Length: 230
Length: 407
Image (cartoon, rainbow over all chains, first blue to last red; front, side):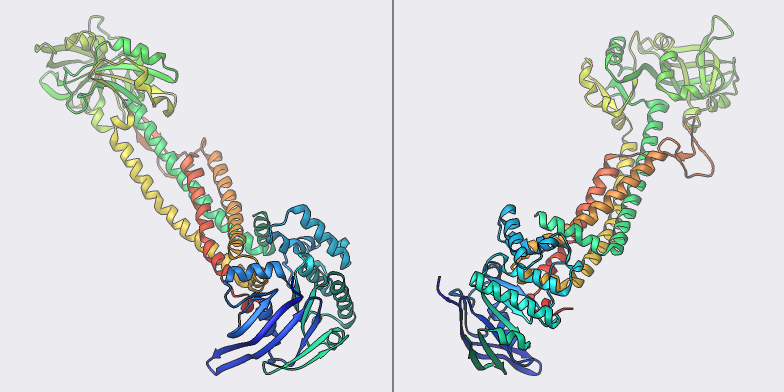
């Protein structure tokens, strides 16, 4: 498998509104390699979420191309995009977004269930990853019974349980206190190293930016600056 | 599939008050339908029972042309052998034979037309409840004059002839050989069946007396019988060896107006089903639409994680199915129990009893039936599930980006 996970060339995403055309992304080129811990920063309206939506195969560009693991998203239909998200991408949302009627274990197993994996394989993988995020004793709890930090750890476990190429995290620390946020970041860094999994964050959090191996700043739908560390 | 079933069940537990409301609505609608159909079916059963037990029986053996053109000559031969065969069939409760003719009844200078029926008194009592409506005297019991032949008159006919118990009546008709059939009888009983037409024209003599009077030998016009249950009637004709030209007819063929009336009424009751279906489907759609609307973000997450549309449809349909199972199941159970509790004691729907053929109808006795307790509830449940398709489809079509922005 190529070491390039994300390949974006001249990506534009324009929206037509009654007030005129909104250029949410206006010509972005970006290549992300396997194992990167990349942060995308920028003020509100800079295009962070739009870029993350394109990378996450939730949206397609108006112009340009987006490739995930060498697969171009432009020509893909909805079903194929859903399969790509299921098999290659893990999501961590700002508001955790666990499925409330499922237990911790079932939430982590969910994506593997969609992939058609057998029960014993799912249980084993989910329990292992929940042990890594320190939630082995909460397998049967419902999301509502967990703290925000615990819910976000479950969300991370769900995102990585099926071993995707890429984990997208949209402001993952925004709803957490700083200590919990740092603990979560440390955990994600550890998982990034353990599994050589690519993490892409959209963030305002200085702590996330400080720990990123690469920091990209967006402004008005364009990359304003890029900074590599380490 | 199991995850959809599980999520469906857990989701309906999430909003317990709304679930209870929807389940109650479904249960109440189903209970109403089961009970109303139970009352209707109970009434039909009573109608059939009264129509068959009064006089006509549940089956008859007769010449195939007799009902269309009753004639002295369209008779059944070997009636004893046929009755013997019928009595040997398991589930046949009673069998009797009749001879019928029309003629003139005279008392002094008064004359009235009427129908004379020759019956076997001891067997007739087991078949026709009409026999039990004797208001005076006995049903073909002993005469005062040992030489006289007994006759029982409808009290209306007796009034027309101004004859009382133990009075003499002359019948005049035609015999099968073309001769004049005339005989003098002593009135030994009067019948007040409550059916005006019958009371005004009917008269009964012993079968053997009628066969002799009409020169019929051992021929009869009808063999009438009763069975333990409707099931016995099916295939009964194949169990007896009938002479050519004779047929065995069930009550539905003998009284097509009764079965047609019941069928028409059943068709009318479908309107109740439609009303309840409309109410129930609207309730289900409303509940699930609310549920889908409230969980827009959740469905957005499921789509973002790669859940295919059909699986989201399945989750919502399973919610509808659970509501249907609980609501319709509860309604059917309560309806069935209510009918069971009333089927023997009856439900008083009338202020005054209605008399019919010697039977008083004051109550309706509801009955559990396949139609009311199984078919209609299944239709409601299936319709509820079908009603959940629209909200389910809406959920599956949500755009994940838009849905994820919802709070």
